[in-house]
Amino acid sequence: MATTNLPTTIKAVYQQDPKLTTLKLLQTPIPKASGPEEHLVKIKATAPCLGELGWEVNFPSLFPPNRERVPGTEAAGIIATSPPSSPFKPGDEVYFRLHARFPGCLREYTIIHTEELALKPKTLDWIEASATPLSTLTAWQGLFTQGILDKKGISGDADARAHNSKLRVLITGASGSVGAWALHFAAAAGAGAVVAQCGSFSIEEAKKAGATEIIDYKKQSIADWAQEDASREVDLVLDCVGGPTLAECWSAVKKNGVLLSVVGSPDELKPGSVTKDLAKSTWFLMDCKGDDLKEIADFIDERGLKPQIDSVVEFEDFQAAYDKVEQKKAKGKVVIKVDI
Image 1 (cartoon, rainbow, N blue to C red):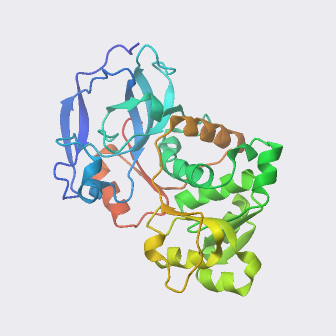
Image 2 (cartoon, rainbow, N blue to C red):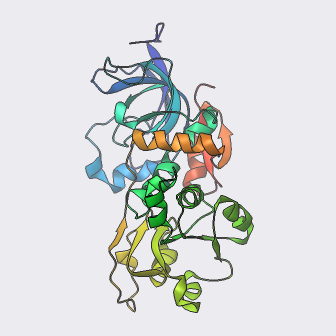
Image 3 (cartoon, one colour):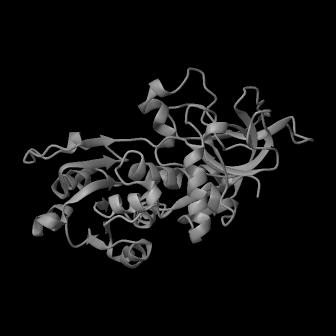
């Protein structure tokens, strides 16, 4: 199935040299969807990811040779063409995070695969929807796929909520894009305690999201907080900060607990004085799962939640948008309008 009157050429932004973060706008042929899972999607907006322009240099094995270097791994848009067996049809409004090895979303049309797609939350506009997939998938999978909370607790499943109620969860960087979503998910699933590590300026927001305990990093380290009271130890840590903060999380996690980070390897930062063994300690990357995004969309629509947006820029300002993200000057997501 296909939308009629598709253009033959489109505007697309390329990273021509993987060693450089400079981008260039070009006019290129519209991509062709050919595989049984491939959809041509008209992009409405996309959001840069921190470090994205260095991935090919830092993780070369993940990328095919001579790939088409179009950045932008999360976006929202409208299905233009879909394969016959697809659950999605032309005209469907979707949001997604695509695998980084594929050409991205910083162009007017791109190819998205069935497994990556979900209908966008009805309560989010295009800007908000484009800023949501990566952060929510990371938080969701950190708690429910990699972590030990049961997602069925969100829907009220009694056994799941009984299980979750026995667990204490610590989320570092709780005022950031991933951490804030993790607070909402953990609280909604019925975690026995949701500990948020954040700054003074974010305490009220963290409590609104469901935090039951606060560690103000401007006043106290995680290690000092944990050592004040042995009962503060947690069963699960989802670290969104890395570095010294991740190292301190070893003081807070219980023996045989789970320590996850989206930033770095917990084992590499394990203090020499720590002797406890954990059931799991790992750095993980989120998976581009449309099925998870479908559940997340339902969650967002039911609760009227919104992503953190730093700023919105026009398509032609793509370089400034990426520079701001790379320089860590953004508080929340920077969104690039492609066709709004």
